[in-house]
Length: 219
Ligand SMILES: *[C@@H]1O[C@H](CO)[C@@H](O)[C@H](O)[C@H]1NC(C)=O
Ligand SMILES: *[C@@H]1O[C@H](CO)[C@@H](O)[C@H](O)[C@H]1NC(C)=O
Image (cartoon, rainbow, N blue to C red):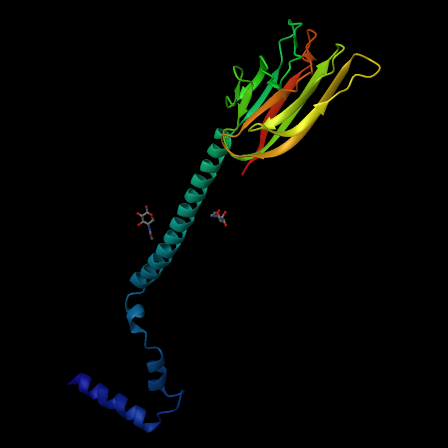
């Protein structure tokens, strides 16, 4: 009964001046969001919960992305570590006075003294370096002879000559030659130094004939 009266009163107020903002009834209608006003504590809590959920999912996404990035970085680092390749060898060690050559044909020089063989790419039995993976490699060869016959060498990849070292005897007997090249190798490519026929190299209790290579970067 009381509700009915109230309804009637409200209705009356509206009919009287439906567009007036100053009317008490209209003002009351503007303040409609009674739901929150009725239980302010639970409403604030609900909003906060929503915000926290949004924050949590943002953090979750960030953490997921960071963890994915970390995994990628670790894999890249492992790859770099696994592909380390460097070798440096000389004809003999410092106690050896031997020469190699001359021969009537080209011969692969089997460098016997190993300074460094990171990645085990160099095989002293064959004198050959096998590229463990594709990439750009830096290769260097130095030959020396102090005999009447001059030193020489062919740096070869899969038996194809990529650099030639030659030193013709002129005034003195002390002669050496060096070549440094960067080459793109495929995994499994074989690099060796050949002594050309008629050439001679000698170690005089020093590391005078060296062969060095390393992976500059994989590609
Ligand atoms: C965030 O991650 C935790 C742990 O994996 C999970 O329990 C929670 O439901 C996630 N939150 C959101 C909003 O995705
Ligand atoms: C993850 O890595 C990508 C690509 O490298 C980068 O754009 C992104 O900003 C990284 N994400 C974070 C959270 O560091």
